[in-house]
Amino acid sequence: MSLGEKLLQLRKMEGLSQEDVAEKLGVSRQTVSKWETDHTVPELVKAKLLSQLYNVSYDYLISGNHIGGDVTSIEMIVDEIDWTSAWSKKYPILASYQGIKGIDTYREQVSQLYDDFKKEFDLNDVDTVLIVKDILYQKYKMAKKLR
Image (cartoon, rainbow, N blue to C red; front, side, top):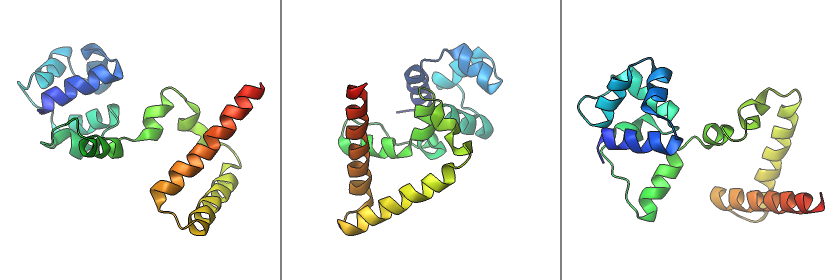
C-alpha cells in the first residue's frame, strides 16, 4: 500500500475531511489531496504530525509494509496504535486522568496487583493483561446490570 493510500484510508477511518486534515496540519486541502494521490509526499515534519493525528507510528506510516488481511499483519498494526490516544476521543477521561490528584497511589497499587497476579499464576504479560482486563470488564458489566 502506498503512502497516499495509507493516508486516504487512515483519514477516512478517522472520519475526517481533507479540509479537516489540512486545517490541523496548517496546509491546503490541495496539499492533502496531492499526498493521498501520491503526486507529492509530505515533508518529514508533516509526516510526523500525520502519524500523531492518525494514532499510528511514524515508521508504519512511511514504511512500505502492506496491510494484509492475515492476522500477523493486523496484529502488527494494532501494536502500533496508541490506544490511550485513540480511545480518548470517545472517552476523554483517558486523556486527563493522569492529572487527577492521588491517582499515582492507585496506579502503584494496580501495578503491584498486576505483578503479583502475573507471578502467582506464572503468566506472560499478554495473558496477564487479558485476564485482568476481563475481570474488570465482568465487574463493570455486573455494576451496570445492578444500576
